[in-house]
Length: 597
Image 1: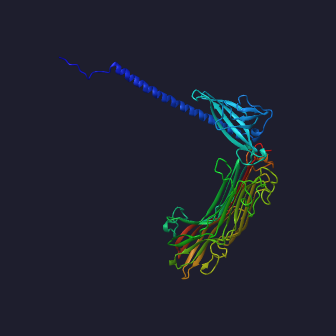
Image 2: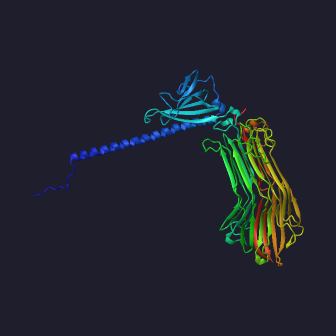
Image 3: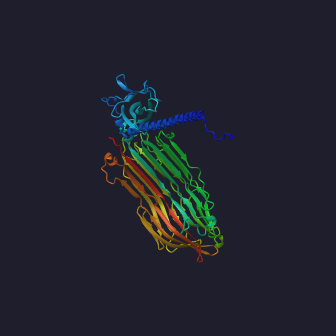
């Protein structure tokens, strides 16, 4: 008898129907989630579009002349679709509490400015959705105006009407006649930049053939560089709708680059101020001083002996800056405070200064005792104590004896940048003959180079009441060429080659020759002005592009030598000696407001 196989049985019709019902239920649930997710994406995209349209509208207002935005026109009436412009007591107000379309986050009413840009609407269609963009300018208080952009839209996925709002503030106490900084008076405010300070000066010793390699004869620890830096200060101010300022002061310093680097001095104090309300509130006056100066000599050593760099021991620096700067923050090059403006309308200013001590900076060579020169110091470079160095950058509308003297009662003001400094005697090589030192024929106590009475002053101005830019450099510079001394002018470009030998005798009679070969360069300050031809009318000269003046007195005096010390014809060391005494820099620019009178 044949039996029936049970493992070949299929699904019954009932089982198939149940499975289909379950699958249909799962798919329906998944479809619901999918549709909901797509709606969320579309809603997010529509919110982003509304936000972008509101931002665009505020940026458009900021780019318009101030009076175009804020001056009321009695003949103007609200657009029929400007639903938030509501008549009240014979005037119009901006009402954020309409029952049908309340603006989220805003309440109450504000006095409405009516003109060609306020109480206006426009429709923008994006992806088949129409967005109505409302623009309102309202009074916010004394000389302040609120800029409001409201975007209203609805769509098949928005679940009713949606509203996006953005606001900003524009402020200018006297309309286009004011330079008060609070966003955003746009073209009504003039543009100013001011920068002044000292370019960094330094004395360096390196490998003469490859600055990345150790210094021959002083290569212990892989030393590749020994450097001394002169004190510096800098001051900057930028005024463009908002205002910002920085000031810094740095004392003299010395550093060694080696496997175990070391440094001393170069203490820095810096401050910054800013009136931009979107940043942290640092509009109040700022002042700081440099930390206590450290003056431990920096050295490199090796088979040739020791090179030692010593800096000023008591440098002191101060930096000050303020958006509303009084005479205590705005200190001029003569040490006297500058008046930035009337007491109720002070302007931005930054100033910095360095007051060195009465000590000297010196780079010296101490030959190894094995050559019979125990404790003998051979002077390479000496810089006597400096005078106080200052820098200042300011927007001025006040009367001062030596800054923007023509400003008078002008309103926009003058961009002022100035700096000064003086150096003590600078000498390369020995200051005395005898005692084991033998000069080359024709050399005297001036050494290879001697500079005395060096002083610089730079002043640059642009804008209302500005005077001609100025750079003064005084002092004397004598350079020994090998045959005699050349006296170089400090206010004109000059280059003098140097090739000479100085001999040093040890107490035991050993003689070391010091061969200096290189050149000394004087760089006259570079003065630039744009536009180079001017009518004298600031609106005509400085509206399309900024009027700018710049003076670059960097690298005032440069000396570059290859110095070779030898004993009995055997080279002990050969190194590159670079000297850059820095210089003064100043720049100022002024761009007139587009709709200024």
